[in-house]
Length: 533
Image (tube, rainbow, N blue to C red; front, side, top):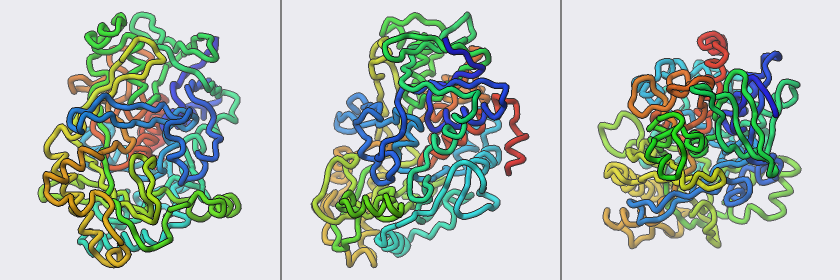
């Protein structure tokens, strides 16, 4: 039976950070349990190949329940099941979120998580190609790069955004997010740079770190109100990993609440429905689910320099030999944060735009050259839930996002689709567009746009919130130091702790959570982070 000071469940965006930072002390033993396998697939390393990982063994391959406000469709929820977690299968877009997001966390009962508190952790993590500044760091483990081989069409998209009235953004990861700019990316020399690359692999060289892959967690071991270890199955054999100090759940917004519920920690009604004895009543477990819904405005173009047929051997050879070319693309290369109506405190829409046809998560193809102008709803009002379908740990949990439940969410997306058309109508894009593929020129009225949105809406892989952090809020699961309310020896440190979803892609803030969690566990908050700033 393995023993360690700290047992970390999940080698994902936050778990890898924790493994590295906690093991900096050579006297501390760290054990990481990861359900998936290694990250050696070429589809992990090649940036543009990330959709090839969907619906594979590297994917938990979840789907929601039929969504009542999206024509009763089940919506796909990919989650990384390998070293690096979802940072090994995402689109590598470096976005922190808005300062007001973190100030809102603090206002909702999480002291110490305001913008001024978390900025030093973002900076400590970074090795930013833009150099050191008041808002950015260098020398950290996370490679934040400018795009290596961006498509020229990206410049056309950016210029057309400016012509449509969207200002240029000088630094969308600084204090002011609004505007259009090229994405910065999690890459090093044209290949993916995941949390495993940045944090876990260096840590695995230390003698005080052990990583066990293929370890499916069955539940937590409790002795009264103290969590003492983790039960897991590997190759058909059950074991217990004992934690002499703490267990840290970093399994993500779907799996962390699932593990709590399997352990009898959660809403008594939910647990009773699947025949699980209540060990600790905590009704908020699995509630407060949020994700960013999106869809694409898709256009055929006459410019041949798109990602169409980027998988041809010549492009693969260029990537293999030089780490340049089309395969270094993250598909979405241009980023724009916009407010669709007056009076909003921040952008409600983030555009992901690029020289590619991207529909149905990359599974629907188009035989020709195309671009996507994809609005993402970054401040959704809808709240959902994760709960057990069965007490069988191998059974997938049930997920419901309630996407578009709130009328303002649909209102924002309708306005965003209209703005996408305004962008497409500006030069230099206008001269390069052959036709609008989707929604299509017959979709004109607000009612038609609403129908199209319900028909095609997707989730953009940012589930958060299901183990909400707050010292005071009803249904909070962890406190501001990430300790599970009412239990000892157990913390949660991943995207599930976000009280409110950040305005933008969630990988960078999840790594920040890992950085700050490590200091909280070590009692170093305000010391290490302050020195890093």
